[in-house]
Image (cartoon, rainbow over all chains, first blue to last red; front, side, top):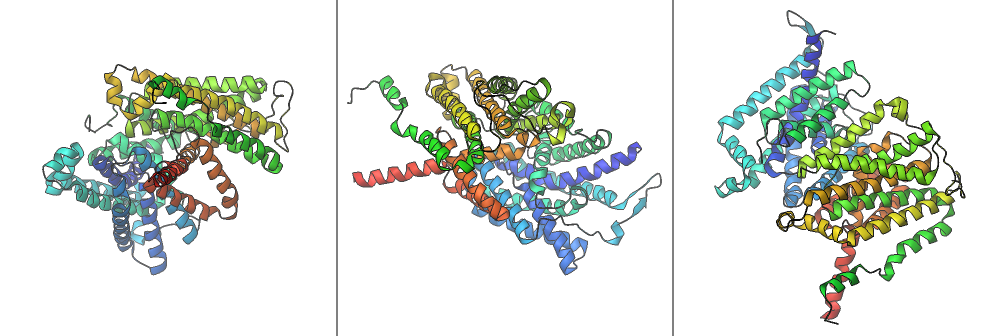
Length: 287
Length: 330
């Protein structure tokens, strides 16, 4: 395979990683909440998207929107009912709670829908190959790259150019200072949590082609999502973007050239990076 | 009565209580009462030892780790590889080797990792474990790769008792004895001044620094000792089951032992016992009949414990006892 083909494939899976993990990064950065159930929202969203297309015949775009809204709503309910009680608790309780939540999600999906994996049927215009002039490549991967790039642009604008984004940045950098200046960090968190979970849901649907979609999804990719977030730096949208692309491409390349255990390099690199820069590649020191 | 010095009071608190013999009596009673469940009982005892090792770092030193299966796996693979590649099947020295290797891995990784805290530490422990898992997967010539090393057999314990494959009688008693020794080590350690300083680090890091305690050295040593104990648990696992595979290093084992410990109640020595028995008995009987419903159930239990009963079963029992005492006093 030549270089560009590999690069494009890696970028496409990196984009999926980004769409799923970006919410996790922001919510972890805001509250320091260790949310291991984030992948669960991605899985549930993927199921909503896949099943609504299969059973109700929803078009792809509308199914994505439905997935976003459904999971955002669900996450607000969970956040208000449970997560909010654990903000002041230690990491241990948060880990325990969110692992329990993952179990509940996995078991509910297995019980309600079944243990087999689901597929998202792509519409015709996303199937096949597209001629880029110099290369023929899968339309869907190109669409993923385009969608991810648009999303990061939108999120970046939202973060850097709106008042809401400024509040988030302030709260990520210094939560106490921000709240004493009148930023309602709790409400900010609820909203970002909802948006982040909704994006994860969309990522679960979009990425079903690459990451698959079955009840074990949340645990299987947990380490990957966490690596992306910690490499990118907590609460850094662009950081997560570059980290996701880096890891997506690296993973893709390693799986081709070292099909057996090549991913060991990703863990080793993450380990060394975090030791040298505990705040991640793009995080600020001490935040 | 009131003229106890603080030292005397401490000594009194750490003296053996009569009820501390109960778990051991129960374990022996189980040996005679359930001869058909000794293989399962052996697994419970191994889990207790593993959870005990985690309790040392998590419950006492306050180090939150998601990667303790790394040491369990290091011990398990040490025993497995010694037996399959070098014909070193003597069980006790095998366990010692497991403890040394796992302890060394713990010492090195502790020296490197324990400079960080919180989420970064959580990620680093997770990465270390996954790294070892991938290494075991890759080094197929030594570790058997994905399939692991099956069909191991071990020599006689002390040259006297051979492992019996069918009934697990000698395994059970062997594991129980090792557990007792390791427990006594852990108990002594926790009630020593070293253990007190660990609790100090957990309760107030800043103050421990201020009084000049060598915080990092204490944490690293505790981490290494805990790793060695986890390695012994892993070595026992390989010896008792006669195989070792990648599952000993997985996230599921690391998360599972956390669940066991927290269910029982961490930071109180006997939480490992209560948690392992409660969790594994339920899992053994419910998970077979209702595998999915079991997972749903344990998920709900975890959520409830995290929200309402942070100190686990033992913590709950203490609260209830405290309430009753209050009522009878008033």
